[in-house]
Length: 250
Image (tube, rainbow, N blue to C red; front, side, top):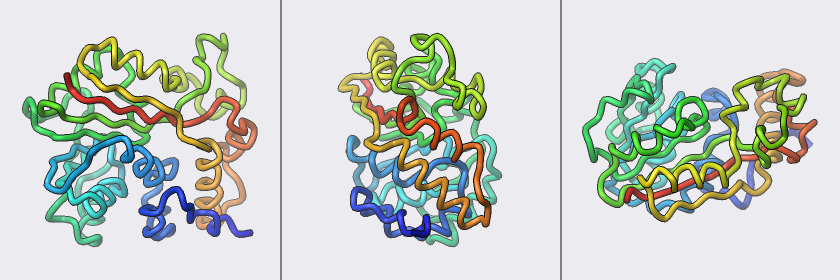
């Protein structure tokens, strides 16, 4: 069965409305809409809210937020040219709702209490896991504002394992030191005292979903395999998953 035939999942009905080829053109990692749609179930996103999409990449998640929830979005990314993301937003008819900005996650250029919600999809691991960061980013949320993160995660902390599993080390290397369990992230946010009502869970079939997407990307690009595919196949869900974490400012 072609890999593309596996990309319509009943568990992600909103994501199924978006063309896989369009998503592959914007590909920068795991299926971003599956992660966001799952995460959004733990958030209260309503029309008119102002949302920061932190680490927005080429903009698929920002388009999804604007279309599916009617929110106003700042699409913030350090590595993507805002003009490139802006072209995506114009083509998708959401340029009046979404503004692309080049932003360093450690130097957010916004005022205190700017946003109703901040979301970060497959980017938090690059800037957000230091103990200082959750209370820092909380300052940009309004009272009762929400933070939601979907990030690659492990089923067991590397420090408990005593080593990085070889199949992960070959692909991710030392970067996996910033991949934590959902419970670790929950504890970190709670100990920061910046958030209440913290929730944290792993995505059902997180590794399998990532593998489905990776195979579809390779199929559309005409490639046979990739190091990521090999890593996911070797893992089979033993260590790799995604953590979905949310909290409200205190």
